[in-house]
Image (cartoon, rainbow, N blue to C red; front, side):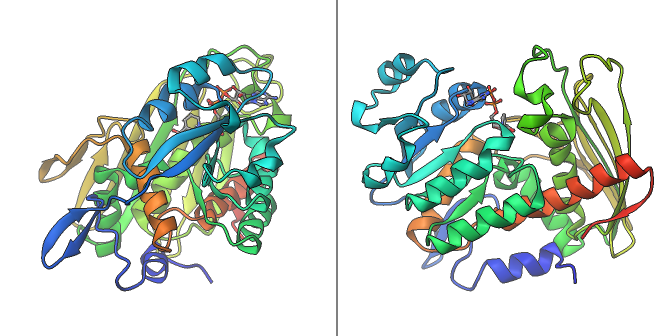
Length: 367
Ligand code: NAD
């Protein structure tokens, strides 16, 4: 039995626990109030590479409900840079070996796992066992079974888990989700989306290595899969997939370009493309009574939404700051997460079926 997104949102956002669309605000006596905690939660980043350095740490300078309290640093990282730039006390600096002792650190409430994909599972589970809430980057893990273990570890240790699907916090994307949910243009019949960039990393980079959960389907394909799922508002039931390699030597271990076709229970289909050899970033939906598109649809800023009625302009927010603030708010107020672990699991189920379809050349069911 597949849960539609509409039912899922109904189930996961209870009465009195409403997160009002794009505005991260609450309604009190008819007045919209920004949701700001009395005391910020402390976050520690593990995986201090591109995304943490260039995007998350700067976003944490804009957050109202969380602050950068600590780091978990490895051999590849420039610990001194972090200590000086962000004034992080030494007592809040860990390494991969002593990470579990973070359990005793009251400054740290949330661990943000920003490691290579194959390491998400181990560090999410270790964080949960240390009694810390977890924000884990996308894709959640390499296999669906890993996601299930991560969800269980967080439940067993009574900590919250959310996945880094930042687009779900973005106002234009939330508007598109509403089009699907409320059938603003009638039933959506067709979605096409593409997500790609020109990957110039050396072949030794983890994104080009199978053992680390590399490959384009895992890295960028999940954006197009998410896009189809949140636009149509249903869970796909089958997938066919094809792959192409312009540089088989460079991409000897992982996929370089993948196309996929998904079918949905209500009759919609999606045609998706993801690539490490071209920059592409768009989503288009054709519905019974109109169309809409986002181009770009998955950038950090500047999402552009149009419908057959014209452009739709909403606030251009810092997605990562919004995401971390909302996660902290939901932790403190014990509210459902907008992007719980189950959301990462759903994408991994599609990825697994797509891997099977690539190998078999046949249509595979998503189970
Ligand atoms: P990166 O290669 O720049 O950094 C990875 C970091 O992990 C390293 O700097 C290091 O601190 C750590 N690490 C530990 N062991 C390692 C090992 N054996 N090999 C390599 N690194 C090791 O990667 P990134 O681009 O920052 O991506 C990290 C995660 O964040 C990935 O899961 C990726 O999908 C995700 N991400 C998400 C977004 C988003 O928009 N949500 C954007 C970029 C990356």
